[in-house]
Image (cartoon, rainbow, N blue to C red; front, top):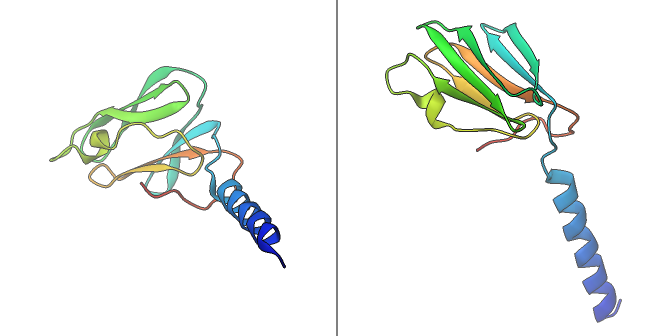
Length: 114
């Protein structure tokens, strides 16, 4: 195996790794409370939704193929500080309100950690 073979092999492995772990775009937003689905909407539909959390109403914004928590009732507002998520299997976990907001789509990745 000469120098160029090793270089080509390295490039192929690098590109394969990047394509394998590149997050895919999602197409649906699902909101769960206590492991029960309470809202499922298309990610392409820009709108503001309100969901009842444990501590009060949580306002969820779907905009430009992303989702975020805009307003909530919780002690330190951790849910709204997480900002927008855009990729399949990314989640916003709002423990004070017992909510999980997840983007669902075609992906071979189990979860994305921010």
